[in-house]
Length: 296
Image (cartoon, rainbow, N blue to C red; front, side, top):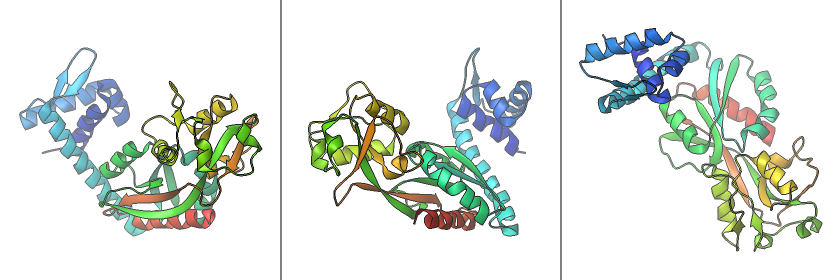
């Protein structure tokens, strides 16, 4: 009989490409994991894993079995979550992932409020860029994502949480630092520092800057907003930052000036997404209500 635990071992091998790391993830010894995978191969009558001295990878049939196994594991988790949610819809663990340009600035504002409003709910927090976040959500690894909207996926439910404006960040000695407000046209012919590929905020900033003659800093793409902030302070260029990232307690930065844009300012919409089939909808919606109230 097919064992869900054996499928979990196979999926872990697919994710890590390493017996030792897969065993650690599954909280078993490496020999145990290897033995169980061999038994699974014998039961199915096919080779699932190519074993090499310093590397392991799945065969083509192994990849297909792992993908179906991943879905079965997600469904088994849904069954467990359904039973627990029936006992206490606003209790248990809720796995929430946020993108890096939102998480560090939103979480300090909402975690205590959520804990107070939903005392039986335990948040498990993760940080992923947009595409990995969506993949984890679709695979059932997380229950809820918080990111910039829109998200073109009809299998997901979307809920707007708040809208935040972008501000212009410049070094203190920059000519624009003397202005009270910035215009999009001020970006013309400026050296603009941007995040690396994979961050949705990079695409948002490029969309704004494409209206004028943007010059992206050559040879540099930041991994985080904090790196962008330090590069501006160092006088290497200017950048766009979301309002939450420059509001207290994050706003004070020696050597950097931030300017709001004239109306209408560039902005982004931040929202929550979750699977339409999830059993944790009540908990997700309750968290959304708390965030909306805080950000209002």
